[in-house]
Image 1 (cartoon, rainbow, N blue to C red):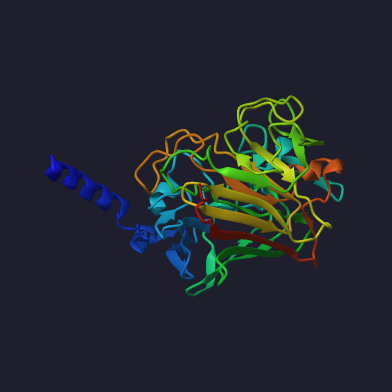
Image 2: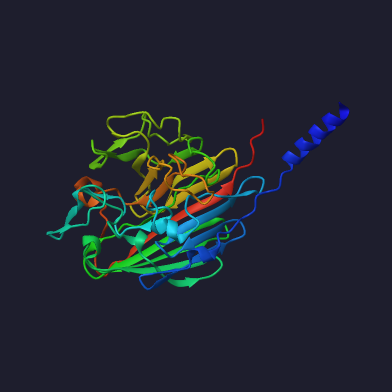
Length: 380
């Protein structure tokens, strides 16, 4: 009996001292491919705390390894381990990608600028979404430079691509900093007036990719107001206060706490896929806009930006068709996106200024920062 108890105690000791999970890089050879005469590759960035892998196909964040409070690493973004899965996927199109030239919806695929009406390529029913049929996410970006902690990429979105006017010259850089942040910086200029609104569409699960839903993550959003939707789930040009609604994240609470509750003024669908209006001191002020925490691991992510809005998407559209890097299906609400950007469909609503308009001689400049840390375990 004593021997059996000793064996059991030893097993418990081994379980409590299980080895920490280390970073397991995706093989760069999985992304070696030529698409329309341009070379696609996979690049690895490190800063001692974070490890990230990025491909120049769509400027995608493919993997992002973050330690927990024990120092055990998990990949906290959803994605695929092979370029062919991005090219031929039947699930979420935009995983980890740069989206634009105009992120989010343009209703009816049309807008008017300087008295000229433009008809865009429609890729979401009767509407244009995240840039259209091609968009920045389906382009092979030129790598300008890359080192251990920074990669800079460039693309030219040609005049007429997806129906947009102007040759839009865009540079995006990803930087891992000494203070454990991922900085995403966008710069662009144009030769004729156009729309310009870029963001990154990474889906996060701070417990780890393939390790369940994000419903027990804690989220806080620095916003008293949000833009609202019509009966089709499209922006209606209005905004509303979040107080006493399922959309009130001014104080931190579980993502799943009110996720399926309806509010007629704010949504016609269950789940979150809305844009909050970031509380700022001025239109160009750089502000904290959200904090995401996974309590069991202690991983925390803060989002800072100079943009006026932040889209929170709770991963409602994941349907299990896409199989992620862990070899497991990406099911409903197993990742969430926090995307700084202009307000959706702003160009078609006078009430949603500022508008995502870029003129010749101006520079579009955007900075979004994702700051990672680990919370200490709370004492009982």
